[in-house]
Image 1 (tube, one colour):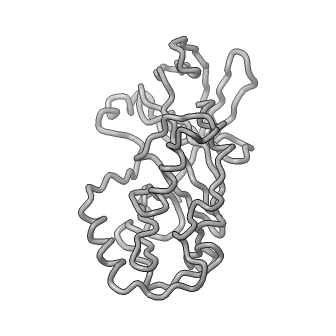
Image 2 (cartoon, helix red, strand yellow):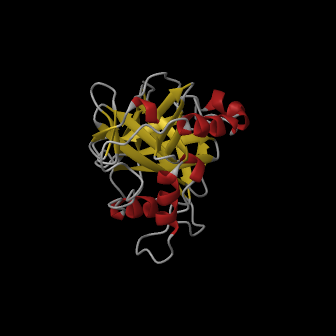
Length: 252
């Protein structure tokens, strides 16, 4: 989890989309958006409307007040904890990528300060595809169950994802390595703001009443962290550190 925070703090996406995003108003891409969309539609839809899985259903009754996504209070850039099951949790740390992609106050899609023509965008059934000069730039699926452009999406393909993965996996890049989950790379859009999230699985996680067990340093030495929940606020009480206050994240 510490590696996740250190890596994302150092990550810069400057030049990541060179030759990928438009530098001048693009021309309509014709039928390429439809072609890319058809290919995306054939991909198995694994978008999550909830962090719970079938395997976690038994634990859901016991830990219903814990499972879900929690935002660390008063932290910039933002980080989140996802408690997906009794033995499954993730740390998600965010990076502001508003300059790369965002939706403005009129819900227009903007790339590199350039409004993208509607002909280059497909958005229906929770699937979003942006194409430029016959190339798929960005493919993603809604994960929050909403039907408007704002909210959370999971990256599913496109040149942006390919270049992002290549950059993160570059062994010569001087940054902390993180075992991020490729199926949990998300973009969260709000008005004139976009945050990229990578998820790092928390090793040795086990959820118990009032206590979380983790192998936070990945060395096999587990630690217990007491927690308490009051409404939509969770407070962690690490043994050596200051308490951590988190707010439950809700859809919409």
